[in-house]
Image (cartoon, rainbow, N blue to C red; front, side, top):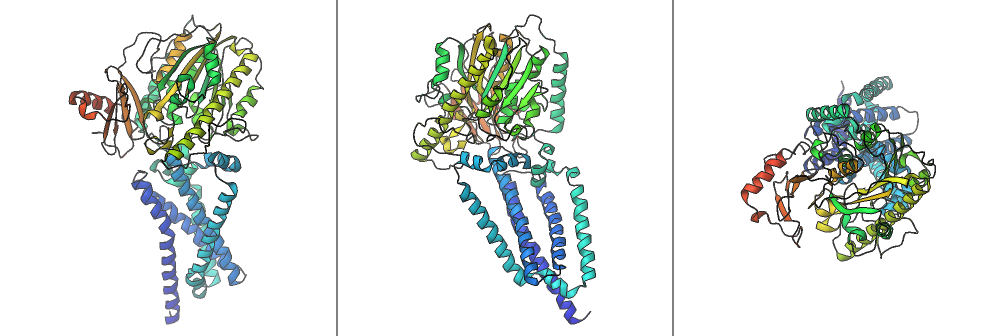
Length: 624
């Protein structure tokens, strides 16, 4: 080989090495944050770099293919710049989806879920309070800057142009075909690799069902899940319906991110629930209190309510209230705002139902527009006497829920999803926006009940109104349903109404009520046996439960209902930091009283919580 040829080869190798090094900068920075700050398993590092390497192989093949085109060098460089910019922009989108998903849902955002919101971009951005033109302009500018930077780099350090001077077109063609064939084989086997179990972000985005996750943020070992599933299946099989049940219709209305302390019905100073207050004045509302959610996320909150299970004991296919009612001959209809279909398989959690509709089932309205529930209810037939369960899911109070133009404001307010400020003005703006959503939910609930009454379903019906979890509005520097277990994150309403021939429900006095108690209470009111696998208790009868459990990611805690101070105790299992508050104190969660609690009592709490630790993150410390 001549000296000149050797120099050309070295130039190709040097430029190729530089290109590879620069290409790895973005993935390496992401992995650093993904593992260190988002607590992904370390296995994700090597697996994701392998995915990146395979994408680099495809890029090299396409680069060489462009280099073989019989066009001018300037056009080849433009085509290469656009291709590389598209790939880099794709990585940016993937990593942004990972960060957004981890922040708001506890999991890497799936392509299926994001596609719902992207397809309704204007409505989504309106809910976020972001300008469509501003986002489009920012994306366009970013892409253009990336393409220009790549073009400049290729002008000076393009390894493909150097390859053309070293290798013959035939050799380049063979190498190109080989690289593209290798990538095609890799793509064909990508799903079968199952790398989502290693928390590889692209795999999680494409195949969210593969992840070893019980529900959003809460991971569970497959063996533990199998054990729980066996118990749920046994309970499902052995359940025998009560012969003397009263089959009143059941209407469950779940409002997403519904804080109990922001309902004027429950004492909030701003009048956010005039319609619910009117229903109480008519005597139909027999229960109006709050309950402690099992977590601060939709998946485990909805599953906790439906199957009466705390986070640590939630099976993948639980024996739900919906299935119980089906055994009594009920028709079960789900009418849900929001995209439950693509939300990590949430729609499958309820079991077999008679009809299912959610925001992803239509394209006429924004996916989180609660008017689609009213539209769908208009198509329901009149009641024919067959017992029916309706479950409605409202997004009005959710930060991504659409506020109707006709819904009054309580003062200047704006979407707070991206809010980080803690000034009085920022908090007040978030509160006004949220309260407007609560007022809107109150209106939608009233309209739903009016439509159900006109169709005859309230001639004999029990109606439950609750929330899946709470919402942070600047308290402790947090917004939305951030990863926390503060009271604003967990405390949801529990309202129960009796219409027509349904028996009124009267509860025994209780210091605290758990979200897992709602379904057993409802079944008891109907004279139906509570499944033996359920954790909750029917609140109409005496019971002696000491602890109420809650968990959000690494935050694991309990409320000791038998302590006079009504202690709320929780641990950050990553840092080991402990918190104890007296819920009967005027300070509530302002004063940590851990130092005042006897060591023996704290030891009892910790021993109990260790038994509830099945869904803690892999980097949690079980020794606390």
